[in-house]
Image (cartoon, rainbow, N blue to C red; front, top):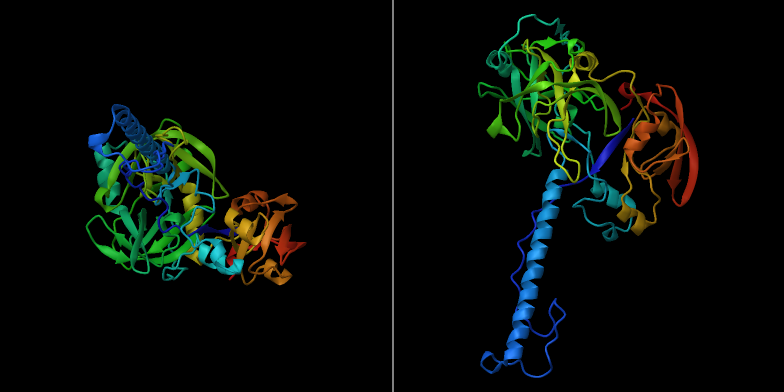
Length: 450
């Protein structure tokens, strides 16, 4: 796959400033009223008609200010609904490229300098690396026949649910949830919880905080495994997701909205089985639930009525632009979690996943206009060990099409190569220095590239 980049967003949206009070009319106003030539009439000498005009102008200005305030409120409210859930992935996904606080392209003579500051890798995780090959695996157990109360489920599972705080350069960056599955410190969470961080702290239910290291992370499945240096930790029991049916009870435990609401439990049912969802260009088959999920729940457990974890919550539908959407959340089935986690535990990567071996991101509309670049994806890195590097693809190239189909985002590239295998070839249409040419490259195993 092509690893995606997202624009830097130090502050996606700022609350609108309060409307300024109406200015006293002088000369020309927003209403279009123009003062007659000559000295401005003083209040004591204003005629009745002049007073009426002044009052009318002020009234128009006040109405305009109120209308602007209402409109700003509508826009701000919509933007709030459109924000992705941060620690919980959201559908639709990230805003399109171009919505960034980066320096505009006209300030750079070379588009390469612009893209260097415009993009940051969305999937880069700079945590200290943990050892692999420990022999630890994630075990799935058959469903217990005993039905537990909600209180019993909480008492059984919550000690194994942790909060994960991520940092960039020592500054708090994000918040998510994880589940302890091995007493010697192995924790499963979502890959997107850890993205872009260079350190992470795990908070346990008893108040302990420990630094985390990365065992491995997989972007396509959104599953990551981290490790803390501890022993005799309380562990969750993982059950078999393929035993779940629509209508079965489901419980989620997590840390919505940060530490203040850590350990929140919500309940509902399994709303759908094998729900096909596409997120960030990757097809995922997920469990759907109406148990409430919010920002920070990502990486937490979805639990059956026997107290077994049958999924790892990872996303929700947040909005439908003109309507608020509630009760549509998703979890990665435990059968997938085990498959991915066991590979990460053994070798730190998932084998057999085909990739081009590039880091890339969409060419913004501003860059196309200022630099005359075509629509496509800008290549910021070509990985060692990839056939793309061997064939001559390089940083600064723009891929405009794959197998003859135009592309404007990394997600579209991933859609095109969906179903292809390691060793299959694809044809890239590449723009470089004003010229366009084609290049045939083989997909390689993601675990084999540097």
